[in-house]
Every structure is written in structure tokens, then in C-alpha cells.
Length: 399
Ligand code: PMP
Image 1 (tube, rainbow, N blue to C red):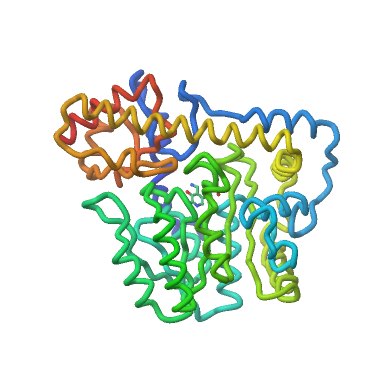
Image 2: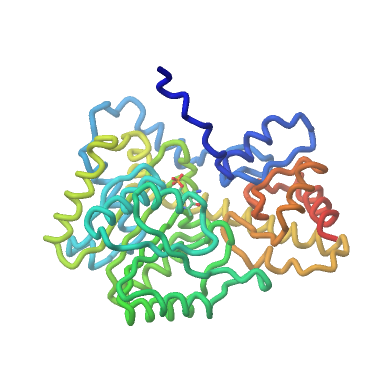
């Protein structure tokens, strides 16, 4: 008998498939603006200096014992300060249930599983568009999905009116997935004023906000500013959930270090919730990996290393902001009659260019430029060296 004969190959991941195709292309001109990982101005992956220094300090001191089931206590404490604020009353009052997670993905999945287990009749509202893995995560956790409108294709900005309508029309007490900053894939975030209105409407409707914060620091260059949406919801007295990732803002992609937190009504509830999160993690991976967590807690726990990190995050964000300007300038100099204002209005790692799947196919086939077919350009892959080539190719396929 064939045990596995009925197993068909899985559909390719739309994001990871782009890198495979890029690697297989022998052209010397090829450009990868598909994958969401930061590159320096020479197109090379970056290890932050603060990470190197943390590694030097850790080297030889680390035993290889298991972390507690909930992960590194220090890493979690530092993560909560970043998300909720250094002097947060919720931290002092121990109202936050938090566990180390397998980066942002693992934090989202742990939350989704928790949601399924303890609120089995709930659904999750997900923005359209969103990071494609959000759909997979809540699907595999068996939580039914609904969508809400977010992006306006004509303005390439926020569709605030529709967003507010969908919040109002959702049943009271619904769960919503919100990108805390630097929305992926659109690069479009609500303004502070709009966040206040969203938060107010969430109060009216008694909705629960779950913030996916994969890019804290990457949007503005300042992690405090990028936590603004969360802080507004906290000020307004919401209970929230939050997924944090150190993949982008510390460049720890492959270390898989992140944090899931849930603000509860009181300390007792937080203790119960944390114990249940650990219970969910136990049969999946028992306890999380130690090395990345130690790097994070070493950096954030040392004032000198932390300020080095803050400078380095700002450096990454500034380089991306500079490349947005360069890309737009180049397109305008080429005489493109289209508006490219959105390239500099959008923030974070991605530019949602507005190009059609057919135009993207032409970029790939004729110019060896690799990106997802939804027109998303990873600005982190744009450099002084390739921005002219990229602008020219975009102009050719859009004119
Ligand atoms: N959420 C969003 C919106 C993302 O863009 C990403 C990374 N692409 C993640 C979560 C999770 O990334 P990681 O698991 O590497 O932290």
C-alpha cells in the first residue's frame, strides 16, 4: 500500500517562491525586491553592531539549559516595556500575560490557538489586504475569518470611511487583527487622529484589538513613535493582545524571537491566561529557543547597547526613507505621467506600487526584477546602485 501516494505538492508560498525564482536567474542585472528582509546599500544582509556586541558578551557564559516554558523572563520584561511603555501602569500592576514566542508568526499563532480554545465561537476580522500568512495562521487554528476594508486602490492610501463602516457593522465584541505600524503589504497606516477614532469606535462596539507589531522602529525610525497606536488604545482603556517580533528591528530573522502579550483585567486573570498560553505551547515545542532571547535581553537591558540599537534601527529606517525618495525622483525625472507620491507617503519596509500582476510579470520576464504579483516592492532591497535601473523598468512597464 502507498501511504503517501495521495499527497499532492503544496501550493507555493507567494512570498518565498519569489526568492527561489530570483536565485535561479543567472542574469547579472537581477534585483530582488520580493522578500521582506533588510539589506544594506550594497544589497547585503545586515547583522547589527549591537547584536554582535551582545553576542560577544554572551559568548562562553551561556549554558544550554531549557528556558522556562513561558520563555526568558528578562526578554519578556524588556519586550513589554517597548510595547506598553517604560512606565506602564499595566506592567507595574502585573496585568499583562506574556510569553516568549517563535517570532511574530509564532506569537500570532499562539494567540489564534488561544482564541479558538477559550472563545470557540469567535471570529477574526483581518484587513484586506494583509500579510498572506495571517490567513494561513487563523485558518490552521480553525478560527473563522472575516475581512474588513483597509486600502483604497485609487488613492493608494487608507480607505478610512470603509474601514470605519466595517468596524461599525461587525457584531459587537468582535476580534480584529490590526497592524500596529508599517502595514504589510501596503505601507499605509492610519494617522494618529484616525487611530483615535478607530479606538473610540472599538470602545463603542466593545471589539478586541489584536496588534501585530512586526516592524516597531522600522516605520518612523523610533520604536516609541511606532507604538503610538497601541498607546492610544491603552489610554482609552482597552484590553489588547500584541504580537512582537525582533526579526526586522533587530535583524534577528532566523533566531525566531518574539513575544505574545495579552493585557488582562487584573493580575489573577493574567496569571491564568499565561498558564494557558504555556499549556498550548507545551505539546507543540515545549519551550522556546534560548539564544535569540538572550541577545534581545542583553541589548535592551543595557542602556549603552540599547542606545546603539536605537541608532541602528533609525539608520535602517532612514535608508529606506531615502530610497523611497530616490525611487520617486527617478520616476519623475524619466517623465512618468503617473503620480508616484504614494511611494514617499507609504512607510515601513514596503511600497504598494499599484502595478498590476501583468506589469509585475513584465518586470520579471524582461528586466529580471523579482517581487510578489500584488505589486509590493520591498524597499529594503532597493539600493543606490539599482534604484535607477528599477525606476526605468517600472517606467517602461507602466507607460
Ligand atoms: N506580521 C507581519 C505583518 C509581517 O510582515 C511579518 C514578517 N513578514 C510577521 C508578522 C512575522 O515575521 P516573523 O515571524 O519573522 O517575526
